[in-house]
Image (spheres, rainbow, N blue to C red):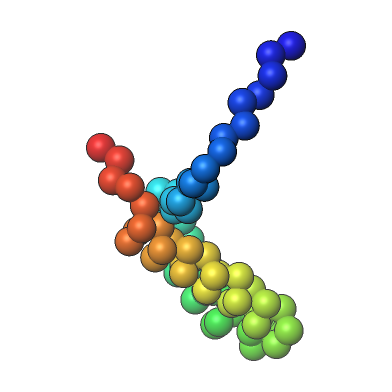
Length: 71
């Protein structure tokens, strides 16, 4: 079995993964559905779902600005 090479020196930089546009769309739709449908029924679940979809939207914004351009 071949030994794995260990890199010494400068660690690699963090790179954002390019996400699809449907990821952002699902984050927006999920937040709106959670705000208008789930939140009035159950406050705890509504807040939890809105938080998850808000984090998804933030991740898609970071991906949009920091990810490398894929042609």
